[in-house]
Amino acid sequence: MTVGTQVRQALANAKSVQANFETFALQTQDEVAKAKYDKAVAQIQDVIEGLELRMEQIEQEEPSFKMDCDV
Image (tube, rainbow, N blue to C red):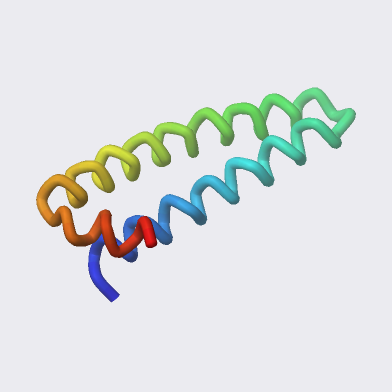
């Protein structure tokens, strides 16, 4: 598995975690828990942005990787 593939997989996983936290925040009536989920959403967003930047770098360095993933 290439680094690009691993980063793409990590990005997908991070987005999934973020969606779960958003769902948990919507489902809870506990305001303290809601605030913690919202904070987790914001923190994972920072991770997602970092992974997206890295993915862009990888695609620029290795254009064939982007073509392989677009198929």
